[in-house]
Amino acid sequence: MLWMLRFLLFALIIFAIYRLIKYLLNPKRKLELAHEQKRFYFLDDPDNVHKNFLLTYKGVLFEGEKYMGTTENAFDVVSIFIWPRSTAALKGLGREDFLFIERKIREHYSGAKIDWKSPIKEFLKKSQFTEDSK
Image (cartoon, rainbow, N blue to C red; front, top):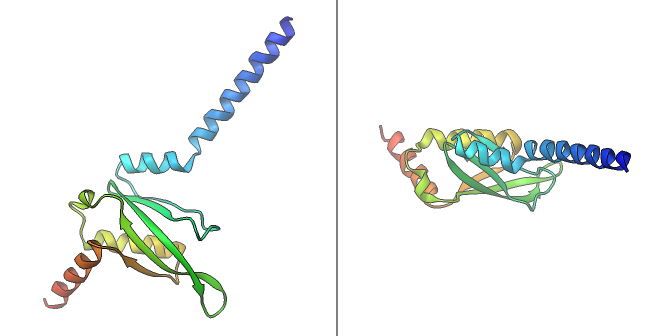
């Protein structure tokens, strides 16, 4: 009877350690932590084109939709649409911030055309026009 109690206690400790490690390495938890700390974090499953990626930057959560197409050599992600989950959270972001996000996405999908959805799309066009007129 005592050996069975020891075995159950040992199994419980192993299970608790396993769950703790699994929790600490969970990518969704890392995304939420980076979002709270207003850091950059890119969460993506590069093997699954149908699954959208999430990224957080300066406390704003963005979602990106990937589209598969053909390139000269292979099938690859050729187009990406990005939008913020909350447009109210965009306050304080500038053109350089969106260009930084595009650079980070290009590190993963170098050949993809990146398009922003409203209102970021209009903001980038407007800010590019005012920069060109200077």
